[in-house]
Image (cartoon, rainbow, N blue to C red; front, side, top):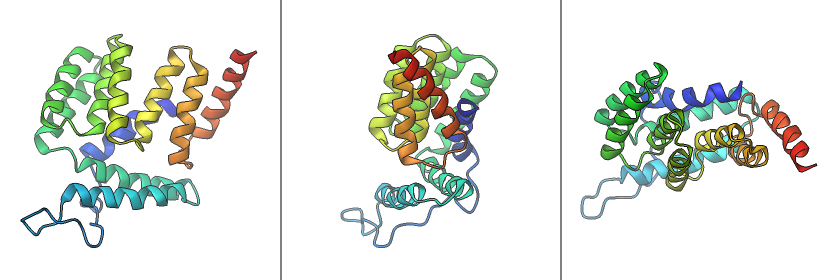
Length: 204
């Protein structure tokens, strides 16, 4: 089921990036830091993500799409410091152990260290949703999308939250936005057909 794939989508690259992908290749001619003559890592990541998202849209099949997705997750993982990753790992254990309040504290602390990491906002949104604060969870997803408008994981989580709230039309819209970025997402087309059926029923 698609919703079950969202959390691994966010965390596999953050906690265990594949060794060959953990350091994504820099774009040729990376932007130099003024006065230092060294490439700007954030600019290099943006350039690499631009190239990878083009490849993701053009992936010929599901295995090809999954391979590009893994590389994108590895680049996103580079935005999380080791200290924040430790907090994230503990938060994930708490979330999986149904200790949402403790997980929220961990993600809060991680975000103090890395407020620009979209994956942390998505994970905190999941903890907030578990605690019943869906308005705050939606705000966190919006912040994740502000930081990275192409984050298909955030769009999938938003679709899931909208569906659980009974908004099949909104859930379909968010899923379509995710599919525009990642057309070969496993299980997404089946999920889309289900949402479309319910959205059309709501419109009658």
